[in-house]
Length: 391
Figure 1 (spheres, rainbow, N blue to C red):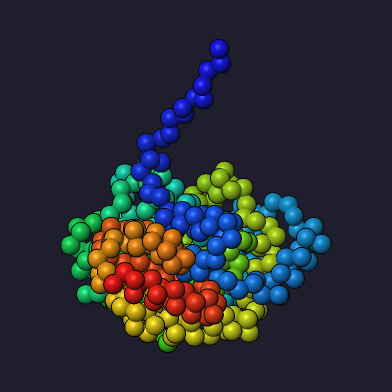
Figure 2: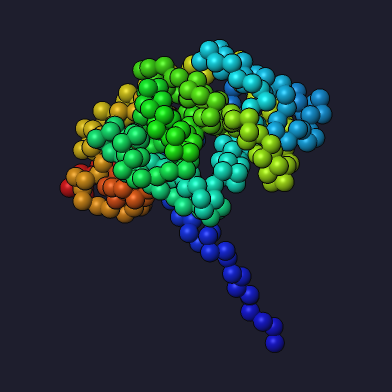
């Protein structure tokens, strides 16, 4: 008699990783679409623009020139030099290319940093609400995660006072700037205060600047200008509409380069070769980038007042990225159920607040305006009809 399927035990720490609800809702929405239903997607944080032509041409040329082998484990020198030139052009800061590490997306950067910096002696501090994957990288390496609740009182920003209340020391503080899910942009002075608070406490500031090219009313200044002990992570996915290329970078203190390299050699071998050569052209796509940014701004300027008119409470006007964090207290429905019903009954996909932490998670949802204005308008019409029925 044959035996039944064997149950394989999973490591305990993987069981502590929370589901990524936006991806589960996206999969459900895709299944509905496969049945012929029309869904308005305002859940996923992926640019709806095609990759600029000059980048695609560079990728094709890389293949033709046989750039299809492994590269150096920390990235090709040409791309490091181009990123260093980018910081000089945009921030007036000279960065040693040897401090630049090319990674398999920004997720690859976060994994490498967690592996090198986090353990039972150094905790990870994240904002709540905040990008959900940060805490999971810490969980994978067995480090403690300390969420810091942020709200309208501090404009959804971490502050030295909030960190002090948590009593954290010897920690890694991850900040998304611009933020996901709120779209707020930190003032350089506040980042300098946070770095000054951490330095004597053996703390490290890490700024995730993946949305740095998508800011609207005010210019953006990278945290790279603060000090050499600040870590900056960035990438090509959002600003350059290159999500599928899976390419990012980070700038780290010199003392971290070799430890990171040893992990990278074993885990990734090298970053994607074709993507690296394609990325050399990304910084030249100025016209396309400005056009995308202007389009995002127009979408935000339509969606923000429209949601307010529908009864959503909007505690923060986004200054960057492509998200709006909205309160749903008026309807008295938990955000998970709200998102599920919006998908099932209005055919509009949203992200529940639980993806971003536990603080007031049941009373907020996130809207992404990384979809066309026409679809955003249609989604709002559907929500209006659905919300009227709820009332």
